[in-house]
Figure 1 (spheres, rainbow, N blue to C red):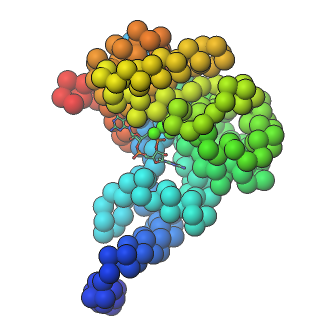
Figure 2 (cartoon, rainbow, N blue to C red):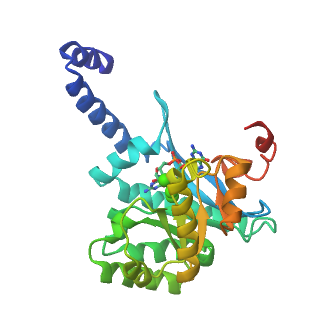
Amino acid sequence: AKDAGRDQVCFFDPAMQTEVVARAMLLRDLRQALENHEFCLFYQPVVDGQQRILGVEALIRWQHPQRGMVSPATFIPLAEDSGLILPIGQWVLETACRQLVSWAQDPERAHWHIAVNVSARQLNQVEFVDQVTAVIDATGAPAARLRMELTESMLQDNLPRTIGKMRTLRQMGIRFSLDDFGTGYSSLSYLKRLPLDQLKIDKSFIDHILTDANDAAIAGTIVALGRTLGLGVVAEGVETVEQMRFLVDSGCEVFQGYLFGRPVEAAALGRSRESLATS
Ligand code: C2E
Ligand code: CA
Ligand code: CA
Ligand code: CA
């Protein structure tokens, strides 16, 4: 019956309507995805200049029963619009915390951090700090190993309240990174007010760092800015040795990208050195 409904819709077609219907169907499936255990977390290594793993970024994956892997770039905006990002974000946090607990037993991984992406809807919840505290307490995760990635745009409204939440979480040991840095607008004075630990240079600047003088200058400026403000800087989306060398020469000390490892299941982390040669 489901397929018949689908055919009918296609019959009336106009492309626009198809698009709207496709979104509605994806949203219907997204509502079921949590209870059907269709999500998992992949982890991408974050490395130092010697390519030693410092930690990982947790990136959600949705294994749809019919469509296969659906990209977070497709379903996260849908989850944000619908409010589903709240239970999904909670699941991400719990899963990452449980992973930290299991790594705490492993001398090779006990020092790794996990960075989770936090959406505006989550951060803006009045209960956000309480919920994070509850997850840390319930799992017994080492809070000092947990990072949160925020973006500039989500820090626009009610800045004092957001800063208050960040301060409370930082007192617990949680660290904050400003993701996709350089793509939004931030004044220097505004950056100084935020209790941040790290800036992440957006991949879009790294992509053309060797050929576009503007992008190279922006990346270099962000590294210098981080130094001035006492913040760490990580370059994301590093794919080639040449990009890495350029970034090292610019003073960047932390890196993330396919060159060092793609996002993989936890069990596959650190076992993929050969991908350096093949990718
Ligand atoms: P992001 O936070 O900017 O994450 C980095 C994205 O760049 C990831 O895409 C990662 O797989 C990709 N990437 C990393 N290194 C390279 C590289 O060297 N080359 C290329 N081509 N790509 C690279 P992904 O996993 O598809 O995630 C897309 C976006 O979805 C993320 O962008 C983030 O905004 C969002 N997202 C992912 N997981 C979560 C989550 O758990 N919660 C929330 N709220 N958003 C999430
Ligand atoms: Ca991120
Ligand atoms: Ca990013
Ligand atoms: Ca990005």
